[in-house]
Length: 96
Image (cartoon, rainbow, N blue to C red; front, side):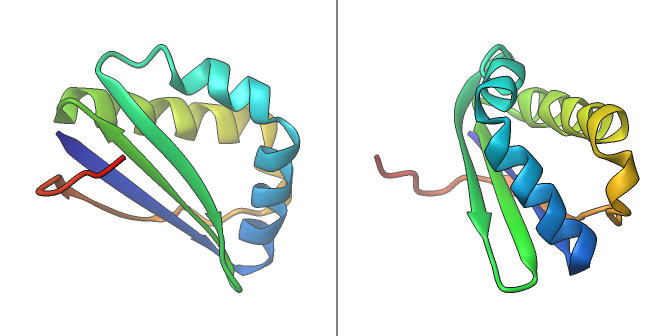
């Protein structure tokens, strides 16, 4: 499995988390069809938030990252969100 973690910070990050939370069903409809989708979590932090996407392989996380960029550009470009800090890698332990 492969995971990608996107960290959104600052005022735009906080606003983005509000938008994503308010449009939960739309976000779910966007991310679930990603090939190899395993899980998605959105975590609110003091500075903004973090999203964690886990897919069966890197192709899935790459697709999810592109979908996220496109969705933010279309639906939240007015929030002044800076590009997220992104880290990704192979999952070594995944518990449910």
